[in-house]
Length: 105
Image 1 (spheres, rainbow, N blue to C red):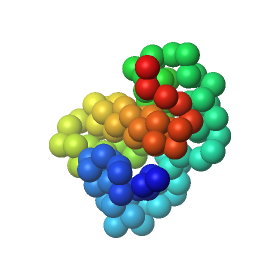
Image 2 (image 1 turned 60 degrees about the vertical axis):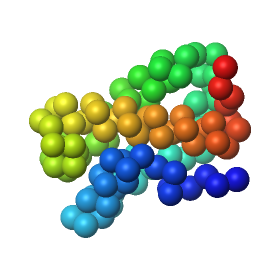
Image 3 (image 1 turned 90 degrees about the horizontal axis):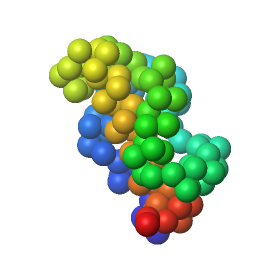
């Protein structure tokens, strides 16, 4: 199985790199998935993929650095936070699929 950070969305990877460059690794730690993330995805397995992404995007909003996301995405901080949260949530779902935590319908 080839599940790793190498499968990450390029925009999310750019955000992660920028956080590290700026010495803001604690912000990266806030959004990196844990086993509890995957258990939560598993518990939502009856929901649509879009519902799961929205659920996690909402949870991630306060964990996204607004200025860094804005710089990476070239958007206002408010819009950038929401867009980055959705992209990270989609990455979570992709990882969960690759790891067999959930299946596509």
